[in-house]
Image 1 (tube, rainbow, N blue to C red):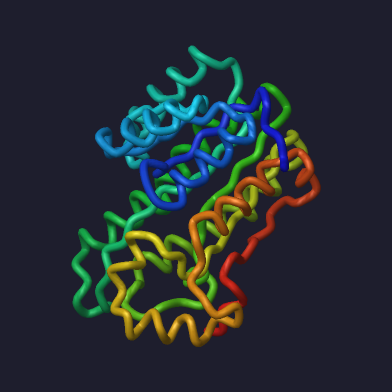
Image 2 (cartoon, helix red, strand yellow; image 1 turned 180 degrees about the horizontal axis):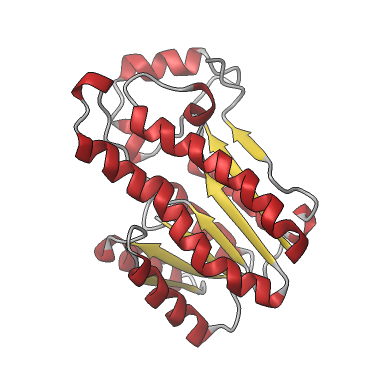
Amino acid sequence: MIQFQNTVVIITGAASGIGRTAAEMFAKNGATVWIWDRNPESGNAAALAMQKKQLAVFFHPVDVTQPESIAEAVHQVLKNSRKIHVLINNAGIVRDATLMKMEPHQWQDVLDVNLSGVFHCTRLIAPIMVQHGYGRIINTSSVVGVYGNFGQSNYVATKAGVIGVTRVWARELGRKGITVNAVAPGFVATEMVKTVPQKVLDGVIQRTPVGRLGTPEDVAFAYLFLASRQAGFINGAVLSVDGGFIP
């Protein structure tokens, strides 16, 4: 397995779902992991459960839409560790509606978390990585950011935007020892996807050559690889983790 001893990893939106799975996976491979999430109850519970397994996982409440919240959390991490090696911008929300039914606040809420949140976190952490000449930034996009999806104008806009900024930041930061890549999951069996009607999910599975939904572990392994030192020549890439989904 890829090892992450003496590596500090921040994962946003990691109180549940893919982020929580990734936090435990990184910690089992030697990393010190910080869960950033705006749900203190779930975040504390996740960190405590992993600490009981003797894993170095900690929680700090963070609202990625608020730069002040991020800055305070960065300060807390640096009090404990001088460096931040890996940032995984995993936090995301959905507020689905078709164009003519979507309210402005639904549009803005999703942009604030899924796109502006990625900008705020990266803007504040990238200088720390630059100072030490090393970093791995991984942004979570989606298969729908590539292909689009009915009733998700806001979500698709953010996930397509994430791909765009990933490619820009890869150019800006690559020469400073920092790689920036995106992971584009397909339909993964999380609480978010469980709200999708079963008939729709059955159709998704039929269009997925591997014949199943993804698991949080499938995506977490992609994070793990892109965050490794072995992936140092991968920069500006979008790694699809979608089972070969056919749109």
